Length: 438
Image 1 (cartoon, one colour):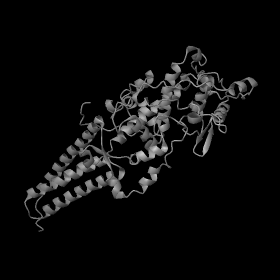
Image 2 (cartoon, one colour):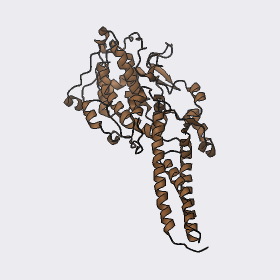
Image 3 (cartoon, helix red, strand yellow):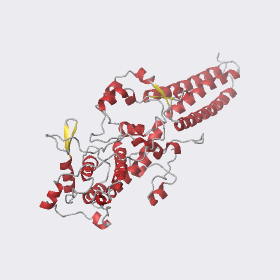
Image 4 (cartoon, helix red, strand yellow):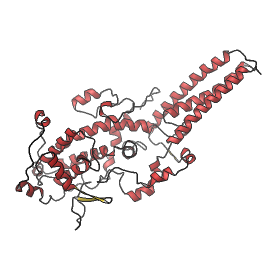
């Protein structure tokens, strides 16, 4: 990518779809139904959402790093988890035999007036629908078909496949810590709340769709998506009719818009920070201290009777202080940047030990556990870490060249501003008359 010395970070997108960051092609792309052509200001093409999802980037800008950011920083990992599941589901559904596809035709949404009008129909549990719903599920399909992206090459099984049979736990009851989620009951309650009849179990992937409702769509589900009540009801009614991917297409579009236009720009902005919070605060304080030291030197030399040329020595701490402060305000430490290093994130410090105890929670193999991390060992360990240890924590080299390049641009901007301000301050103090106080 070409070097841009005037680079500006992506604007921080708030947790609202109404305050998404400005983008040059956003409105036209949204009207045309395409999100892949949207370009966000401050996000280089080499670090675009598609490049990250294809794992065409290096640490710390990989899809796995993006998942960790969503889990630990933005607390919205369920969006990416659903997005990955949906893409994998589309692949697997399209590879079904035509005879099975015909059982789940594409979803046709009702007219707008029917969607907006509340349903007063009472759910009738006739014997036929009960018999169909309680019928044994179809045999599991071979789910080795993967999403065509490098980040999904390790996902070899259906994330919602039935667990091994257990005499005390039904296939719908998946342990989640000390609790057990009854997918069948949660899904049935969701259909009842939406006033729709129980669906036919002969449709392909009906068992998996039921689990999706229990995990992502039902209210108070473990990984509940941030949907409006109308979108949630629309999705449940659509899934009740068919298991065709079009039933959840509007949900996936909403999730993808949040990922592309909100979470990913914030991820790029956050990844520019090469130091942890204690180190960045320390860098800012050091920058202010050097600037104060420069003014102290200039004032003392001005009040004295020495040669005016010595006052220019104050330009050295001014330049260093302003450059350090500028980088600190951008979340960067100039010392770390000089080596193109970054601090390890708190969850990376004990990654080997924690991943052994938590299995594949941070992988793309989805499960039913909520996206909470408060009970992970690294949280308490990092809280007990001494402040000085946090400031001078372990470092690693930044492998992603595009990230190093935009960090160079930010650092170069700081140097330019520091030199300009130092020259102005030096000229002002040099032209001042002697104080002759000493």
